[in-house]
Image (cartoon, rainbow, N blue to C red; front, top):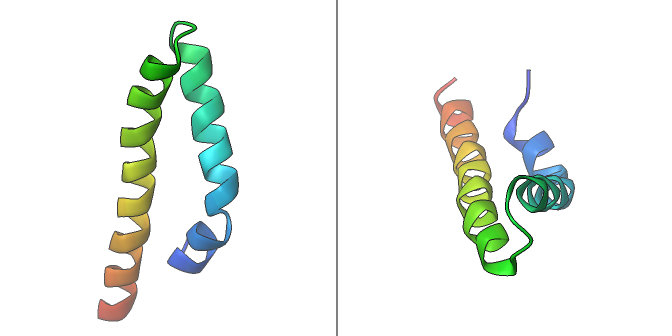
Length: 58
């Protein structure tokens, strides 16, 4: 299982992977790359927040 400590620890690697994936799937334009990467990173941060909330409940 993945907990919020692991997600927080590997945050910089996740940002790198998200940026690389968005660069691959979008046209060679910086703006479109950013427009894809920002929501993906926001989802990653939301998953950390949700994992913290679930950890408090359990």
